[in-house]
Length: 84
Image 1 (cartoon, rainbow, N blue to C red):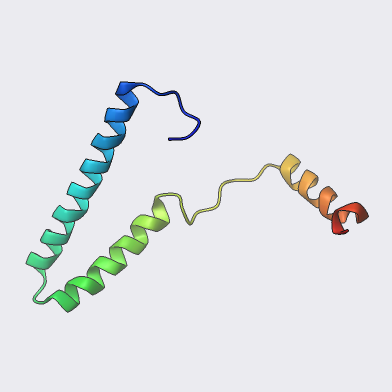
Image 2 (image 1 turned 135 degrees about the vertical axis):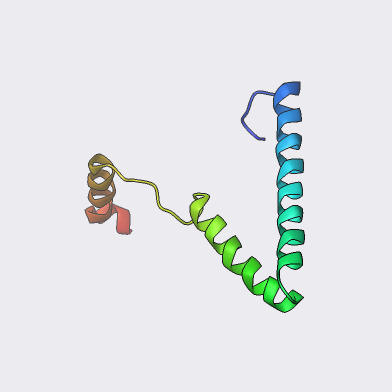
């Protein structure tokens, strides 16, 4: 929480979010174990769905880049001073 304003509400909200995330993943794991015939098949299902959760949570999807950012980055790369 570096760089954010320190107050009790945000601190408690952070721990509430962490607790609910742990609870959600634990309940999902128990549901997968109960729906599949064995832990090996449950592990395959779990890895499949966790990869999709990572994909759609924003970690693997690139953000949109504006034309201005492209021009600035290419102009920096094309300058001779940036290579030295």
